[in-house]
Image (cartoon, rainbow, N blue to C red):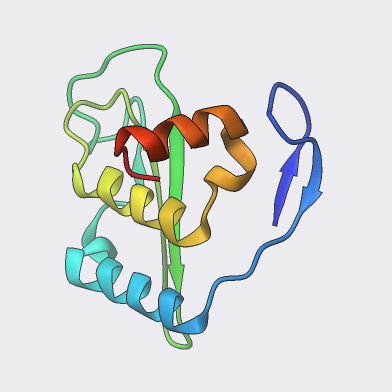
Length: 118
């Protein structure tokens, strides 16, 4: 589910579907990356942050199965954050096809004609 409230291309509530096989493959990527061992809090002032830069976004990634769950909150200005988190976020966006809600149609067409990944 996506809810666009303001300053976004598509306003309102929108729904999408992701095949179970795609979700399973994505979960496998999280497991194989060692996601469960990444600290849950990588934000300013946390031990895992290291050196930092200001005015960067914060993202959250989470997994849940029948037996376990793990959530990571990472401030992208924490220069020591595991780079695999960015790769996992791109995978999530790809599997969920978030571009259908967050990118203007003209930008999507431009990306597809330039060879950029969607």
